[in-house]
Image (cartoon, rainbow, N blue to C red; front, side):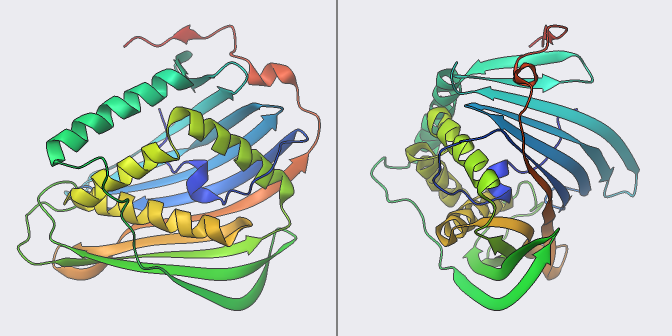
Amino acid sequence: MRLLGVGLGAALLLAPATVRADTTYEMLLRTSDLLGGGTVELEERIVVSVKGDRLRQEATGTRTVETRRGARYEKPGQSLTLAQLDRGRRFEIAPDAGTYVEQTFADGRQRRETALAAAEKALGIDAVEAPPALPVSVDRTGERLRVHGRDCERVVLRSTREIVVVAGRGAPEASTTPSRFAMTFDLCLTPAARAVAEAQALEARIGDLTGERGPTLDRELRVFARRRDVFAVFELMHRLLEREQQRLGGVALRWERVFSGPRRGELQATLVRERGEITRIEERSLDASAFELPRALSPARH
């Protein structure tokens, strides 16, 4: 099973750096998602390792789903991603199935741009439109905390958006009046986690090549801003608050992200809640073979 979860860029801050040493860090994530018809709960442990210009991300966890009718089921899963900057490619591996999908960074970027072009045409978006923006309040609380032996400062980011939503994921019925949505990032930031920042810098370089950052991301934001479904509102607000988070600098050792809005007659229900923390950071020599595609795997059938 491919685990549902946020990308690492959504969990941590990026800092410009050059990777100098092999590093490993581990984080725990707990996510509750009510954007669909039921409730999806995800608990996962993510281990990120970097060796030179290669990145390995392994996630294990359990996905629990409760439908609107009360049926409940859960499924454990594991996923593994290998990104090789030196070879310009990424492997998405399903260890349980023993299969993998290989994609070059260039192919990934092209597919992303093709999908964006189609969305821009359908929504009538002009290529010269400015990227959307949101007013974001930044509260430096002055509160000092300690997370797994490391000091950090609590900072809270908040923003709101009012929009007339249409039927779709998170909104089973269209609305004729604006709905108010809010998002909060409650972070504990530290400048003293160089190993994590360097690993995130490598991920940023990969994101530039795959189109997950830069001008392509600006185009995605314009698409989300033009759409009127709740899922698009969530994506737009989340990504814009991430950018504001990045401007603060440092690394988030612990965080809580909350997205709220109308749901089933309630004006401000919690629609998405994510809690996370970094539990371990190490700098040590890593086995190069862990960053190569295992020989026993087979290509996934499309």
